[in-house]
Image (cartoon, rainbow, N blue to C red; front, side, top):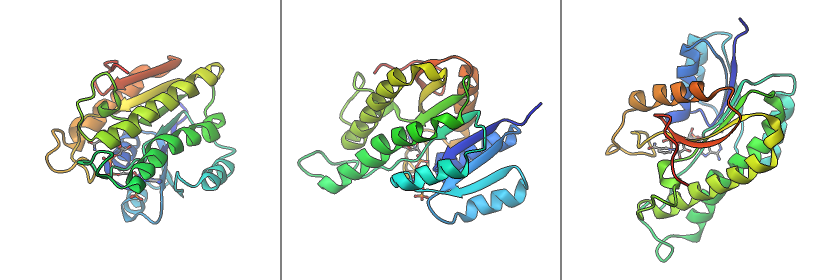
Length: 228
Ligand SMILES: NC(=O)c1ccc[n+]([C@@H]2O[C@H](COP(=O)([O-])OP(=O)(O)OC[C@H]3O[C@@H](n4cnc5c(N)ncnc54)[C@H](OP(=O)(O)O)[C@@H]3O)[C@@H](O)[C@H]2O)c1
């Protein structure tokens, strides 16, 4: 059987790196991106020769994403996973946050991931999957004020993905907004309820279970649909 290929955008550390390791462990070929040099990805390449390609891109750089598309023009992706994201001013509200922190999150967490999906979508044939890392906190229905500004950027991401799904319905892609749970990474912090090992294998199982089912779902690691 042909080896499946996944492109993970934002794979230098945390959940993106763990996704890369998980798919390598399951026999996939992974194209993993980082903003700059990543020692962790270099070490992973040494452990899995020929099974991982490391590319450099900042998802906030539109020309850089288009250049990545051109470099991968001849590749066929079974899966595109857009993981990159940031959290700033997590305790703040609009009255106390810097405008820059909010705008940075809106750009990195909402606008840039969907631009990347639009730019890269033709590398994914019909029947393939485009998944974007959102958060349980992106649910407007379940909002409780926690991480208010970050949560708003993930709600904006969900909205942009809804619009993307409506406009690109003919692609025949499985589209997933993935909520991984609250996980101990640099972003999640040490108080988070889950280890990476308690989240990422379930996330990959869930994505696997949804392959070949076209349309958009906002879904957690247990394959439960979340309220918008
Ligand atoms: N941890 C959680 O509890 C949790 C819960 C729900 C959702 N999420 C989401 O899961 C994703 C990963 O989170 P994490 O916990 O692994 O965070 P993390 O440890 O802070 O890692 C963030 C990753 O995103 C990359 N990144 C940030 N800005 C980027 C940009 N402009 N271009 C390319 N890559 C960029 C980082 O690259 P650098 O190394 O270059 O900075 C890093 O690889 C994010 O979208 C986050 O919002 C996390």
